[in-house]
Image (cartoon, rainbow, N blue to C red; front, side, top):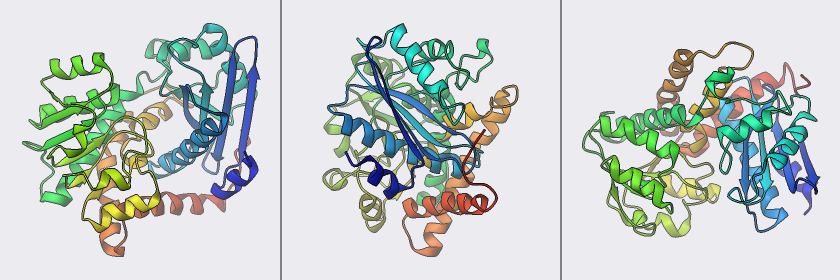
Length: 355
């Protein structure tokens, strides 16, 4: 798989692979950059078609976590854990505890939390084998469900984009097309509905769609969502949905959602810019979850402090829009510059996190 070449290409520090045949565990941890502090990122469990696909996901997502924490002003680096398996059938106590032991071998260079395919209950099982876990339930001294603050941050990012696009950050009457209606999207939707926005949503889960209908959201088919006439298109499922094929179908002024790695390629961000579509870089506006988790590291968790820092995503998005305008560059590149500037400023003081 040319792992080292892939690591060097994007500046990764470490990739560790682990197997426990008895527990059925096959997993990878990718640590991208620990300049700012220990790497942090969720555990994703997914039935990847190949080990190469799992590795690619770990590398891509861990790099995004570095930029996410840097742009949010957190003292954390970027990491990601992936478990190869179907969370519906393979997520046993034995597998999760074996995963916890694996995480523990890194001695705190990687802190894990939930992601696609894992839950708070699963995290509690992992915690039985390692202390290097964030996002536990508040009854266990943790910060709780990360999707609540993630939803708030996306809403704040949308408002900042609205101010730039229409001269007012009010979302009253705005049409929002949400591709995916999981936990993060539903929390975002609560804020949007309180603002009297009109929401159209799709999902592959009937449970998610039932929840959308109960909230007063208009449900459309998965393919129809790209062609929905809207003000804001919000990718809230898996990544890569903004690509050469889908960009032609978008009928919006703003793209802002909760999914990670929304752009299939960097060129897609440039294409959105050329077309005058404002793109809210995903790692910037969906940072509420990592902000919430970071609030419990080394100190008692304070929800008010977490909320205040998450609300600053509005200011950070506004700053990216200003940089984009002044430098005549895409918002995707402007957000990268924001993160890279902070990393460079600290790199001269310290480099690799050693605990």
